[in-house]
Length: 176
Image (cartoon, rainbow, N blue to C red; front, side):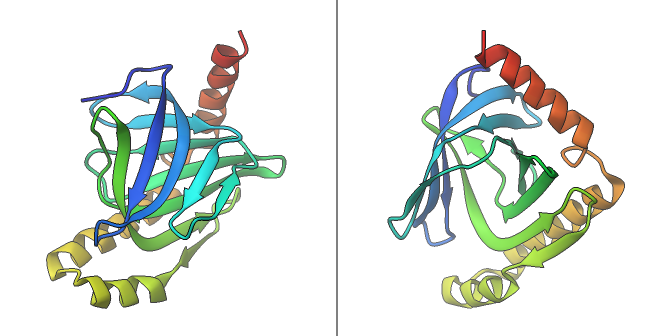
């Protein structure tokens, strides 16, 4: 099942134990096929598991994959395009929302493609607490390796021109 292009959908991220981690009130669907779902958020409400709520400050393009252990947020700022990569289970759309399981590890990428791995301590801690299997850890670490390789090669979704083109199309569609 896929969401319809040009509709807004709810996005949910869970933790391995099934607890809700974070939700986005709406993502505008730009692309939906068997390879990926691409959504745009712009001034969207985000709810955290601890009850905090905030509104996204800048437009962002989200890339979700049904067969990859990561998703990518491309944040469009005045100083360039920044990327935040969540190492997570493959994403599924169930007709109600787009869902995945967040596995703690994140990769932050700047406009010059320099990157930093975040939350390694949280990954180890949650792996013990929630009992990540060896097979699961291999899938998570492979997802991280794949993201780093895509960044190094500057391939989609780490292609500034692709992100800019999607954002321009979003502006054209929503400002008619």
